[in-house]
Length: 180
Image (cartoon, rainbow, N blue to C red; front, side, top):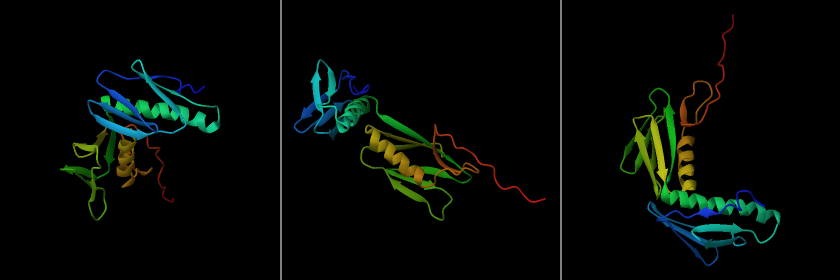
């Protein structure tokens, strides 16, 4: 049995979970509403203030989807109650971020500023000039947008310049040494 899949997902107060035809689940909470189509072969039941996921058989595909389905539902419940956020840091001389309306402008040492528009349901906050916080209720979208920002200038191993996650460790390399 899947260790994660067999755990029930508790539905906190103020959160409404609806299951529709074809395993379409809708989670409504204080921060917003999320809807997702889950795998058809999983059996999802809502009872006694919790969601349980069971698998129909022990095929490899069913075992794989069991824990995934439960985790996706749990992420939706956490998203509508607490929300998700990713923190990015910009390192480098002259590298900075600025925010105007829904537009994030990054100066990353290129000949032009890099401009990015906040996607639907995602909010970016610039703290100072070197910290970017990506917030939202959908874990997948928050992580994806944070990754897109990071790809504009990934950190390099020699000086550590670039955009990195706040909790990311950059393994440093030693540069060239001169001839004697």
